[in-house]
Length: 303
Image 1 (cartoon, rainbow, N blue to C red):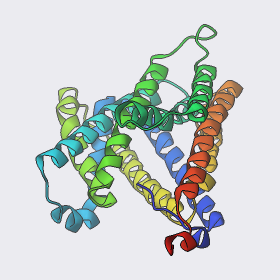
Image 2: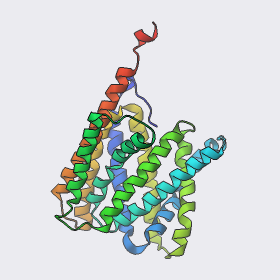
Image 3: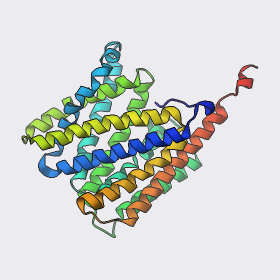
Image 4: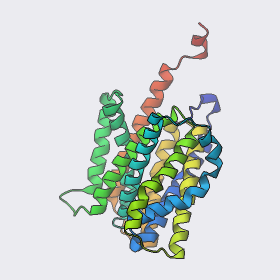
């Protein structure tokens, strides 16, 4: 759940700067995971990333203790954590198989699956404009994958499932955020995910080296900072302003891929990512305009 920004309180430049920091941190997370590489099984890498990140949950302990955990609420927390755990495992696997640019561009599909899921399971309307934007986004996905023109790696398939399971997690988090503070939603996911991953990690355990532990701890740190920066961006500027800035993640990811890992620049990935993010930004901008149109003005509220 994002904070609604009033026009008078909006600070677009600050929001753009916070979102730039968000993108840099998220790309840094991808780089660090790729450095860990195939040295550790994906289940174990994901497990250690969350275990090492538990230290960042200490400030959320009072908020967690204040929550009354009903059976329904607990079920939603578990559902979100399981979906996120599966998505993270697919994501870590993808990082060992395909270029950074491909991972980042395909991850832009998350909001698309969220929009579809909201329409299928929560009854949200999927009008002509939204449906057309989603169609363009799927075309962007096809441009990235180019089935029939190049070999589809298992990492590309894994990223499709990553986006789908992350979307399930986001939809569940949206429901949870209406009932408990956002800090509790994030903290409970971070607590339950390692429990879900523990059996899989222990079944194929490889003793990590100190550098690998350091990289995974840094991954948890930058992921936490990214969530904070994103929250700050949405707090000071409308999502329609900051959403397009996320495209720079793809630019940075491709540059890091070339410089650090010797990956080739793929213009089709850049084009596909632009189509996907352009569609997502269109939906975001249109939703913001519709919300402003539905919100009564101060003069109307006095009537």
